[in-house]
Image (tube, rainbow, N blue to C red; front, side, top):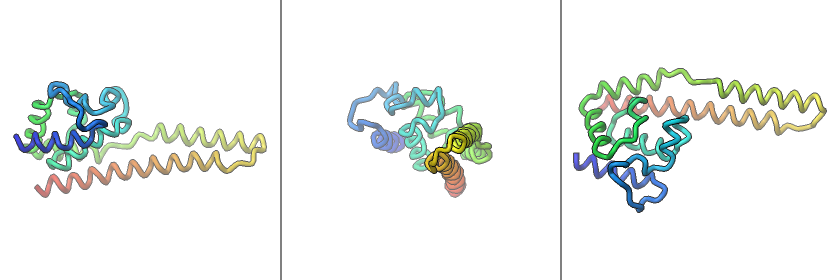
Length: 165
């Protein structure tokens, strides 16, 4: 467990805004900027927290279930969770498979596409000669689509890595 603690703290320090600033072990995960928004919003809004979790998953060949990620763990509890997931690969495999099987939520994409259509229609209606408006929305939708593919590929590769151990 001691080596797990050293590796975890090393990754933790790399993912923080101020790597050398002090932190409380009892409030360990709050040391990564944006954790509080993770609890109330989408996890990708907190890139530092997400980056930390992904590095931990890859380092220890585990996968956290969504319910495990909604709590601010003290360091000792977090290490215990890592150890539990390392000992029982089935939990990690199940979490990865759930993440792979998750149907993407396209409601935001639909709203962006609808806004793009409205803006394009207004540009046409008022004879505004601009290519920027539709292009802007197409680029945003393309980026969101690529991020969803990247996320699915991450979990597919993580599953292979967990099963190889």
